[in-house]
Length: 305
Image (cartoon, rainbow, N blue to C red; front, top):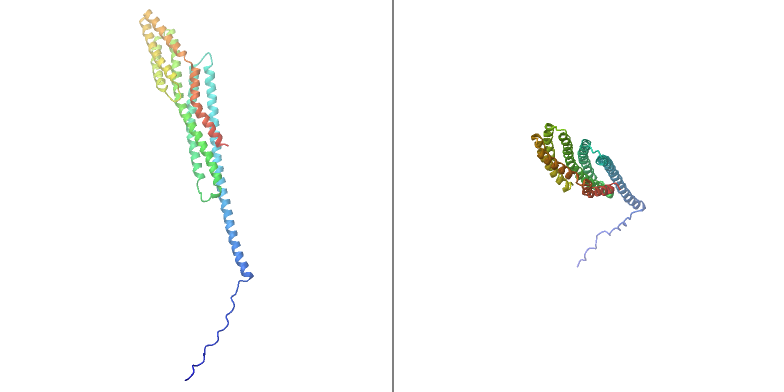
């Protein structure tokens, strides 16, 4: 039996030992990580700085608008206080002049009309600023508290302007009533002078004018904030106009008895109109507006805090 040939496979060569990273390799890896971290940090800082700069720019722009709004409101408040003082001086005078009061009423209506336009423009500016404060939220992530605080201030300023809009809008309507009321009062004074001087032609023309003015005032007497007493006053004015017409007719006919009766009635009508407590009426108007004024002041104080 022939034995099998011996194993002719070459002996296995020894394998090289696995190489472990040296100090340089570890430093290079660490350095790479550090550089990456630094790049990320620099990016975050740059993002935060850019976002903060953008946010502070938006806040500064909003502050300028708020300052403009405050300036406008202060000017309007001063105007209305001055007009109120003029009214007070005229009404407190023993020689009340309806024509002068009418001029003040004209100024009041014109100022209220301008105020309403100014408020609309200011509110539009605040709306634009409020919108810009919420732009680019992806950029202002770290500045949201700053922007949110400014947005809150703008919101309070807009609430204040809402009160001011209500007040100025009502002022226009109320001022128009006072214009018509003062016209009717001036007509009454003119009629009294004309009838005293027996100017029947002039008195007849004035009665027609007075009826128009009284009708207008009566329609406006239910406007915002005007107390019910003013509507009653104008109803009494309607009666006065009719009785003045009767006096003129009686005078034209020469009927002494009818003249005396009509003259007595006209005087009673005038006394009734004069007997109303106009200070009480004025106080009722102030009371109506007080909640709006209080809220306006509160909202504006918060907006400027």
